[in-house]
Image (cartoon, rainbow, N blue to C red; front, top):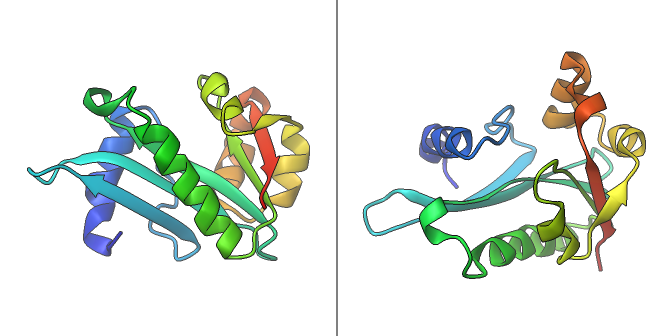
Length: 145
């Protein structure tokens, strides 16, 4: 994803009700997929902890018109593989609505305070902590190969 994609990605993520904070930070790795008209149809990404051992998966989204074809799974697997290749040993994420989807990828419910401690320098964790939203989130985790 290039700098010109950030504005489009923010709009796309807002349309699917996902957090947009910190997308332009150099620590966030993001990918977008576009259709023939240039519209974003999917996105995926992660942000590493400062020690590189933990990855906060974020911005995994599929346009409503492209859902139910395994596209979301492919996007999520791409982010997980990239994080593992970069040295991360554990993946974490927040999800209040898509637990069933994340379970199919090996995620299990996790302690959100442990997650916040491991990823306290990431934009999303800092935002959720500062606004009090952390107490309302559901954390998920899985080891990375």
